[in-house]
Length: 249
Ligand SMILES: Nc1nc2c(ncn2[C@@H]2O[C@H](COP(=O)(O)OP(=O)(O)OP(=O)(O)O)[C@@H](O)[C@H]2O)c(=O)[nH]1
Ligand SMILES: [Mg+2]
Image (cartoon, rainbow, N blue to C red; front, side, top):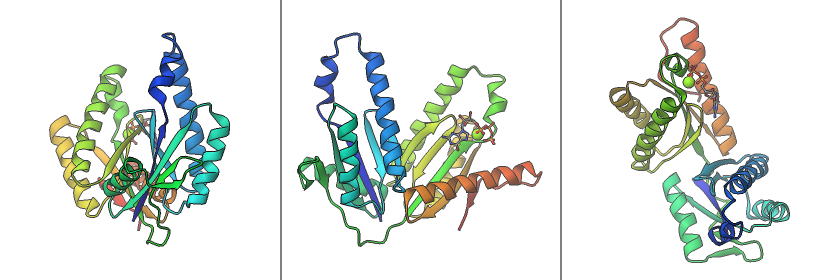
């Protein structure tokens, strides 16, 4: 079972207009500091936040209770002038958890009215998160012949393919910066990862490595996924033939 909390800025559009037209730098600073606070407060409770389009955040909140959400919301309310809404959902797959959070907000299912928290929460279900950490193998060598902007363009094409491919598997993909991507996985993730790596190899001539980790919380799943990815690098750097996928179990 995956639990997701979608955090949105309430009334953001109209508020941005109040800043006048010399506003873009203010908006960028606000979004960066919001992300900083959200990641700090949720990772402290073993969640993991993903920035989605910079003004909306997806947090994997397995094991994080409604009381924890209220406590975090109070801290955010005291740090920012803008109000945030939280919508919690859960499901067997990450995509279904996202739908549940979306429905909770749309149907105004209130979990805590005072602090703008909506959705569904069930602490009794078995908590299990699998994360896949994808990274381009030896991107550094490409940087010698391809300019920084062209590399970025390639990363966004890769991200677009990843998002589309894994959405069909009811999984959610996020760009983490550099050549790093994380996919919150569904069942049969290993088979999907193998197929996706082949598709990318054929379409873009890019070799991907994929570290997989599972835990009761998002932070522990991400830790194991990154450790698995680092293990692929260690195997490669020791001169042995490296696997493309590694899973710490
Ligand atoms: N988000 C995130 N970014 C990372 C991580 N490790 C490295 N990076 C970023 O990824 C960029 C590329 O680094 P690497 O992937 O280590 O370089 P590489 O040449 O592709 O080397 P290999 O991946 O070992 O083949 C770095 O400049 C960082 O921006 C990580 O664990 N998470
Ligand atoms: Mg890399």
